[in-house]
Length: 211
Figure 1 (spheres, rainbow, N blue to C red):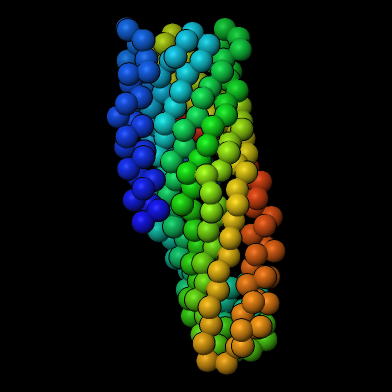
Figure 2 (cartoon, helix red, strand yellow):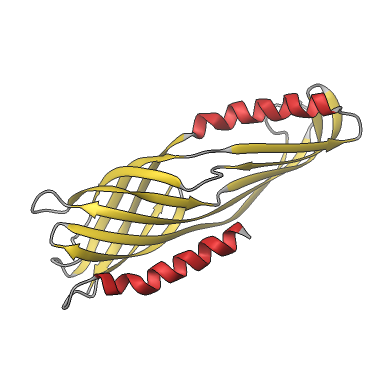
């Protein structure tokens, strides 16, 4: 359900973003490939030095089956990685070129699910777990380069480098032997691991076309 809400918000923002551009500026359509997946976005000038961007990010579902993490050497788990997000960003161009400072928010539905058999705090069982990379919208700060939507026309290059401030959360359930205490101990190990992603670097490169 969260994914549907994110996609609806993305569609709405991308639909109304062109109206942020002033007369004579049709904005910039661009793509990116980076940490958050393949991105498709639209940028429009608000003033000569400021622009806004709305961007949808997505990657095809990835899966792996085998021994994973702290669930023991004999674990047989299927891991699925689902990457989807939408970001709304404001850009400030302090000089005459394309260098910019960016700030905004990422509505992040990136998640990893785990299901199969393995050891839960040392006890064999059937497990089902999920890691959500961010429970809440993730603030974003960064810098980058692109053609200004209002000034340069035609094809261009863009890049972003920054950080997302996430609120990751791990959940886990198990049957077939592990106690509630075992499950909580294992979940705590998962949480400790994903807490390292509270500040997540973001790097993305792409091409654009300004109208």
